[in-house]
Image: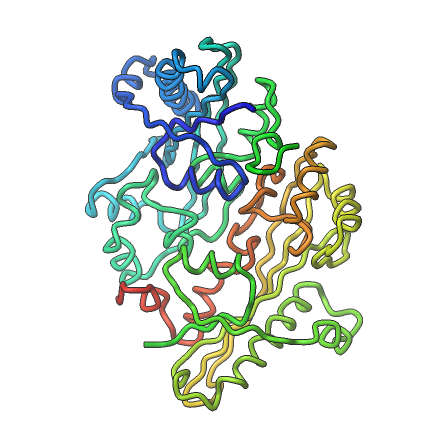
Length: 213
Length: 213
């Protein structure tokens, strides 16, 4: 059976996969994201940026696993999410001040959540196939009341997530609608991963835990 | 503090609320849904049907709680979800045969997931305010491969859910995109509940567990 490796420490991505029947092996990459971005041409399109970051993460983990026979038949999936607001890519706000400034900008408007995906197929230590693409979803934000936004930021939840919001947590109260794939907003797009896995020769039903096809 | 009561046995609805910071009291209604629908005029619009079903559930539970001082200050939320495919409302398929027939109809197409919401505010045993509305979301279904659909139906997951699919489970692999609110597709729409709660005078941040506003 093909081993599914998630090259991410994101509990949200792990949760999406587990709810969807896949219990991946988790390996956390330590890619220098700033260095990856700095190495790209300045005019690189935003959807390309997140794909290159996802690929860098997947490649680092694939390199680590190459010598391990437990991963002789495996797929490594890397992802990177950012919010595109007024043509600027935004990652995690990290501080309450930045989260507040971003919500002042986002509230009552829409922005595009981009998630880059990289899927690498490993066979006997070699990368034998590779597929990658970006999932883009438009997110329409509500206008939280000032006391709601205060309470939300005080929970700390928005500080460590791309775009300063979650769709599947407290932030869900403040997203009126989306146009696109909700799992890609949470961090890993199931329909896109299904397509990329098919491109490297893996069917998703065979990955479902305890439910071999 | 206002007690939040969910008038539903749906684990999916409970999960959405818990992830969004609310740990509701769960009370399961035993409304005869067929009788409620039969009592409506034949030309009742689909979005009205699901709202009336939601209201019937919330009203039954509110009646049960009226005499209990623990619920002297409470809100009761009822929901009902159905999938509108070619102008026909579809509930749970219940059998593999029905699920298979519905997927043959849905695959590669779109349909509208309607979730009716009813919010009742209780004060000292009386319903003092009421708000209700429907959240409608267009769901674009992928075309599962025959072996994927076989494996999906064999898991049993689609049999007990409105519209024969889940967005937050195995079914998520087979939903390419949505236009609308993903939480309403799972079964309870957070932005709509926020609006309806505001209409009856309750702010959502004050319901967040351990995070009083």
